[in-house]
Length: 380
Image (cartoon, rainbow, N blue to C red; front, side, top):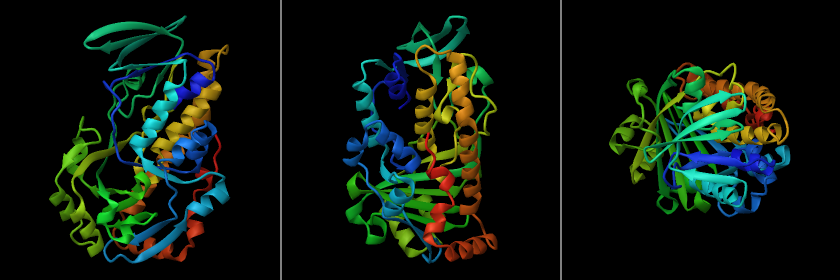
């Protein structure tokens, strides 16, 4: 997304991608109005319409007995209130849309299987050292944008190789054919189940043919995981054991999962600065966050839009990057902190869990959404 934004601003972009080829990855992603309006502004609405859907509502239930705690409107309310839809889709589909859009830009060169190994700033810009097939190569560039994830090499070279902060929680993920599930799980809605030290989310993707399931549980012993990425294989029996005291509907859902993967959740504290000179960070490299607000992808999309507006041909590069950082630091830090709050709220034990459930059941669905007016109505 950042490459597209910069290219459309008149800049020549070289995108160094570590992977040897673009391949399907991840599972579901939620794009709230603050992110979807940007994709529409970039002319991607038609492509999104073929793969994304708009859930009718968010349904919140108590995990142990399936008692409904609240319903929040999404499809009709989001468009009317924020002027853009709330979308759900498969990450691979979004990735494909962005890849195709990038390929249409004549000013974007994509170099696959190429990792940034190091860089050096100097008075004429930045020299980037890349590694491809065990061969090192130097590139002279005007600016370097590190969009290389929570374990960013660019970030480590600037600020030291500190480690992400473990959340001591494991997220388990699976995709299930919708026709194998009861209506409660296959309906066009986002389901959120809350329980002691665990929660579960499900929603349809791929036109409703597949349901994305994410279950998060406490796992202090997995806090030291490293290098497993998003697709470490998991044992379904282990996951089922963590939900053995939940409602029968949830136990049946887990039994229906064909296979599961897992990853250890982690984030970092907000940075006071994102860059130096002609180098800066974007997305998870700058502000990795826990997934409980469903904003990791959205914040990266917002970053890209703002970066494209700030870094334009003919202007001072370092000054432009500092402007981009000033415009983004506070907002992304707030989202990081709000995601951490939800980590606590979602996983309360009694008596706080009972208080949470009571308060939530007393709120109207509209009020549940409006709590995040500051997030959804934002225009980058």
